[in-house]
Image (cartoon, rainbow, N blue to C red; front, side):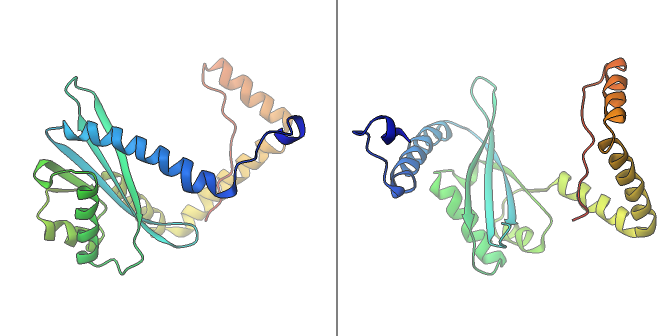
Length: 198
């Protein structure tokens, strides 16, 4: 479109963004983060193993630390593709490699938080790192177990909620009345949304 207005304008090549601009920006940000990390006394880390929508497995590592002026910082350092079997050895190697890539000393690691998967727990034990299981993951497991334990009642309750949301979403009068009630109760105006079961 710019070439239409200015014939001298040269369009960027397809690969410029992926092969030049993004790597350059990544290196600038990494250098800045490395300088910050060099000065910390201790840090904690969080790790998550996850799969993309096309089922490719990844490992993410985030570090958390407090600066000299008492500001809490969290930096997601990397997400790496882990195509190998997720054995304790493979995960331990990747965790150590990630810390090394960011010049983080294992001796400064106060604690790492992960889910309770047997493979990641075994990897952390193998490394001898202080470990804490993720409260959010445990809460999710507990809620899922509770919902699964009585599927008929859960399905009935979900059906009632679905009908309620549909009733409001299919009637502009009910939507108007909901907004009015939210305003009168001094509540933020949120719409009801329908979340799929999947």
